[in-house]
Image (cartoon, rainbow, N blue to C red; front, side, top):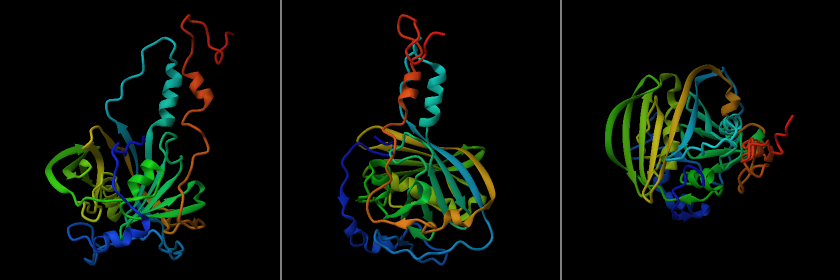
Amino acid sequence: MAPYQTGAAEPTVRLAETEGRRGADAGSAPNGAREAGGLPLQALGPDEALSAQPAQGQPLSGVAARGRWLWRDVPPPPAVPELSEKALRAARQVTSLDWLIELSSAGRMRISFQSRALLLPQHTELLAAADRLGTILLWPHATRYRIVAPGALRTTVGERRVDVTLLDHGRLEAEGAGERLGRTTRKVVLGGALGKVELELAAVPEAGEGAPLVCRALCELGGIDPATAPCQAPELALFATFTWAQGGGVAFEITSLSPRPEMAPADFAIPPEGARQVDSGVPSASEPGPLSPEELAALRSTDRAGAPTASAPAG
């Protein structure tokens, strides 16, 4: 199970019905995201043909951040002599549920999956633009891409199927203040049908119009309509916690943040340069699991009698 799954069945809508389901909701955001001119944002359609836009102009500026998904109440490994601490540290490093996030102040977001343990394979990417609702799913090595309409992000990254789920406008349940990474944060608690989403948002001027895209993605993963979510520039979501109505939950934390004065426009191109648009499927991993047989064998350094295992023969 992926960290952003609730564990409960969710109502889905066929992709062909997406535009009809959202209708005016997809094209309007009465209380949330709007274009700079005050017009409601338009949603990417699942079958929309995107026009090629060659990357031109000067390098972009923005920020790079590393985010990590955190399971709740995970018990520690057993304290037994057979467990190799070195191999355990190595396994934790490659299976940490990390995202590398790049944000352009001009209003673009690029998320790269850095973990072997997420359902979508390592180096899968998500692209988004401030002036459109929806996400671009980019295959590793930028070979193919697929449009993920608003409402389908949760099933895409959490269940490896691009099905639209009904989104909740969300209700504001609480507000407050806090601190993360040395920055003052604005705390917001949103309630919806799937549970609660608690956000800590901090002003990051370097991220500009790209900052709200992280908030919008996190809200959508929590079942909150990004069109009505309280996401605004230049606030970046530094922390989020999800409490599911069916029990359990997960958290997301930005662990590092650094300015990027020069970023390649081609890295944020929508559609991605050189990639072929597809209307079905999602990226699939080439490996059967997050750890190789050798890495699994290395976790056990000795047998119960204290003798070396076959993977660690006596010298």
